[in-house]
Length: 191
Image (cartoon, rainbow, N blue to C red; front, side):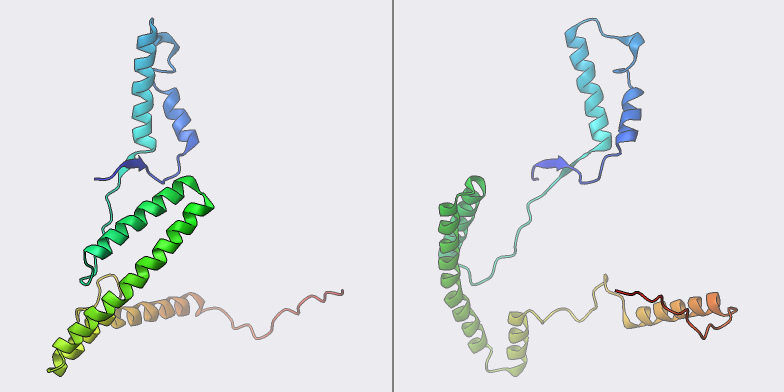
């Protein structure tokens, strides 16, 4: 689990004010007698309202899938790159930015030949079978996916049904109206 942060939803200040006024913190008849009681009540009420109006979201770390060709040197360069970026983000110094950019270039210059060698090896290993070769080529290019359509994308039939229903709805809503064959003249603007 990562660190928590308040949610991005905007807080309705009027609703917050109303809820605050209804709490025992704003009740004149139930005033605490000691500073500890004031603090405890203040802390309890505001924590409750904060949880209601701006709840904390737990953020997890998003792991990027690592390439199969990456080795220990790649991991070391990647870790160094993250460290330099973090240092630059904190300092905002131009020298730190330049150091980070130069390291990024070095890292990618190291990555390219390793990736090329890995892809070459994979293609050479599958060169004897055209079926394996095309499958490997497709997976290396990122185009070899499962044959089933994604659930988040509509099928062709769903799109057709949607547009047919839309056209029918427009026809029904405008079917009894008289056709307008003339347009209003546009106003003349003199410059």
